[in-house]
Image (tube, rainbow, N blue to C red; front, side):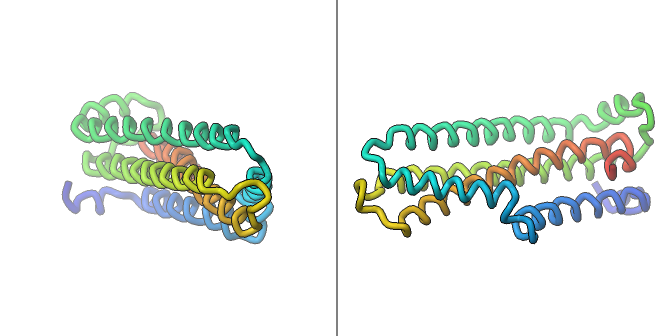
Length: 203
């Protein structure tokens, strides 16, 4: 791939790509740091996680808590493994771009673009799902830390509010990274429409 794709990109393509980046980072900022972020999914989930941590410190038997964390880790691991297959598929497509172009030209509303532009679009998708993979694996690491904190939790009656806050914080960090990985999937699916037409991609 050379610099020819810069000239091959139309103004609509550039706008679509810029709009994609703005939507991704803008949506993430609004959800996590915006004025209503505390009342959103992440903020409300943290309150429930804090309540869970307080109840955990009162329980003598914490098998159910360990099972819940194990279930969360299994879900994250499933997405991480699935993302590996998506990345492998995209890498395989990079080697068969010509066949992909021939297949896409039969779609309605599809535009004829150069091979370089197709490669850029595939690289965008690849970057999205590589980012998702790192989010999922980092979430898994944090859930591992949560399981360690549960194992090291003080006996019933000896736990403090600081212990509960610590458990809830690690739980929320892991859950937030998982949400970011899922968000990458949503935006990756949106980016697929760029192969058809940048107007669909923008919409």
